[in-house]
Length: 459
Image 1 (tube, rainbow, N blue to C red):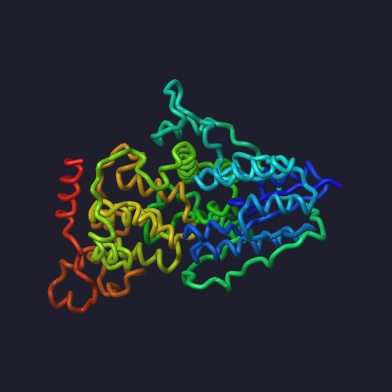
Image 2 (cartoon, rainbow, N blue to C red):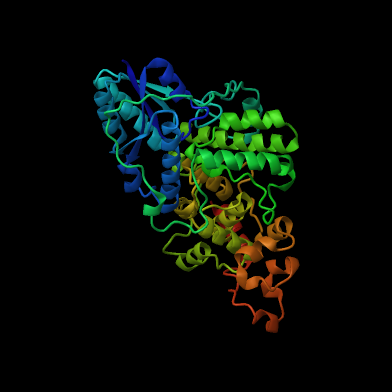
């Protein structure tokens, strides 16, 4: 009787899972293993919203495996230690897992490979599990570069790449009976979870996907920036935890066809783009991708402004609405993310790392590649070809929330203001302003823009 271990990481699903498929073909029994990594908590990444969503995902994965005759094995500790221990207990010589791109994921793979080889075991790492196209599979021709630094040429090359076939979920999974496991975590045991946090797990994710394909995909191109319409897919948490496969999403969208599907595939390409940048430049998780001489304001020099931004009381309604949505749902509309990030990094001229860290503290889809590199794109230190662009929250609010419905949803103290006037409450008459307990703007937009331009000129 042969055995193999499947280490689940950011791929918490049974559908379209190449490492699981390969293990089932290679061995009579498999050990579906998830390690509750001590290091994640040590570095402050194990925050409540993601811990709660992870608990949902693991519970759902365990249920799916039990429906097929198996179960999920849970261990706590450092992955290399626990995987080697489980491999020894199961008599396994092969371990299968998906490739990751973050600096930590790369170190984890290196340590695991070395530890397994030391005890005579093999590690099999599969690409195109977390991403649709493997980082490094597409590189600029003739430039000598190991990755694309600009999205559009990457998208052209990426679009021509073959995408592997989608694998069905296994019908049966046989797990060694005598292998010990810890209890699957529960959301109920996690304190400090956002009130509006959605349910995690593959079952919930596939239900969300089916509903959105039925009701939202066709109109995605036209409506994805509509703040009040909430017309994005909301599948980013499912992609981050791997309860949905990006490969399956691309095949499904391309089969549906149409402008909405094309626009959605383009967004999936943005996700792959950021992953290939981070895989090639791991330091971009915390250091400027494009070196600049910005003298950012810090927690010490901008404490009041940063607090106002975090709490959704900057005096700019669309920014405050986005930040309050984040606190309530552990998620934020993509257009809201751009506006909130631009306001902090460029209008307030605060170090982008402060904003990126706060997003990671709350976002259920908090992903090092996408979060950090999107923040750098907005801050002008990343891959944006127009690094000095500044998003005006008033103009953006009027464009993407013209009737003010998004603002009124999340900033209830302004619900009495009709239409687009809600984006500029400081223009109301004095008697009218006295009716609303809403703060004055923390800065005049013209002053923020002038400071940013001056700083960039000096840099």
